[in-house]
Length: 115
Image (cartoon, rainbow, N blue to C red; front, side, top):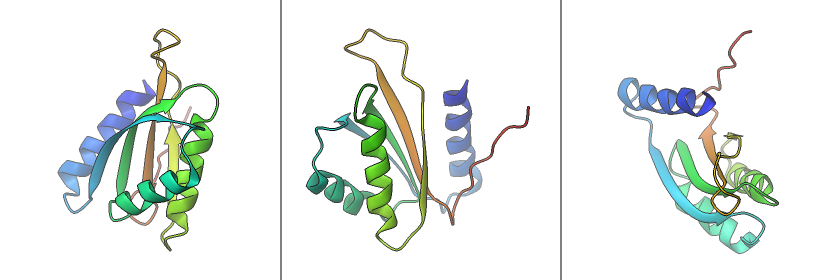
């Protein structure tokens, strides 16, 4: 359900706010194996976008931490960023992954449903 809401939010933004720049990146196995140099490279590659959708965030050890490191690296560029990470997918242990969305807080706001 959360994933559907996030996809709807991204589609809504792209239709009603066409000036919002969105990038989707399948970063293979984003987790503890990614060095700080790689995180820095990724941040420099995406910093001019407003919303970043990332696939293949490791569901096990290191995935959540790697997304936090990426958001921290993006925050060092002088722009404030926030992020959310999905629950793990319902797949075999080998294919289980998470998704992450990172965005500039000046461009988008996270809405928290009531109830």
